[in-house]
Length: 101
Length: 191
Image 1 (spheres, rainbow over the protein chains, first blue to last red):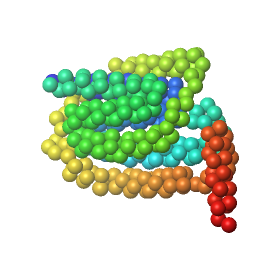
Image 2 (image 1 turned 120 degrees about the horizontal axis):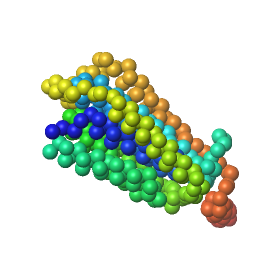
Image 3 (image 1 turned 180 degrees about the vertical axis):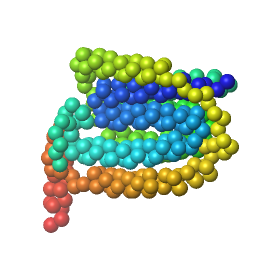
Image 4 (image 1 turned 90 degrees about the vertical axis):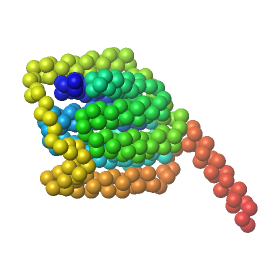
């Protein structure tokens, strides 16, 4: 017996909400990025689940492209964190409220 | 068998996601995320998306997470700086999350999904995915490769910028003093 589409979607929704709560709760930019990854992956799970139950490959292609975009996002985010570290700024999103070069 | 694997993998995915969000130490959070990605890969195999599962483990759990761990190791204990916010903010965040979950559950409960069609032969194989990726979605494929190139350039620009002289904290001041002392010593010895 294979699990239904609805059960995959429920798991995906739970994971998305966990990631979203992490983005709202945490203040370290590193953990913020990690929580964003959880959110992106929950969206990927529902895409792949829809793809399986629809019988087309389109959802899987979409999931692969999301992975590529997530990799680019992580590279830029980690680059910003390293730049902040080199400038000896406090790694706290509550402190980083102004854009400065 | 499918249901048992589904419950085990989704339970592990939810537990490790909670670990990512709740752990104080970012290093442990990152390790939890690797476990999370692995359990999602199990779910993808269950959904017959073999290639996506392989890409998930190799690209995500492998390459991307190694980059995360490198940066966390580079920053060191400073990465753990985390002041607890006010309590009402935390409560509001959890309530907002729960409301969104209820909302999504209501939508799912009222939607009638079709019974699953059995997928065609070769579903989720690299060959089939490659065909679709390089015909129907070739535009998106090219844009993602351009995006990754721009991301790589951005990382180099951000990471290799000049060291600014502005010193904010105690450790930076000590590093600068040590460097100035070293330079002074070097000047003394050269002539």
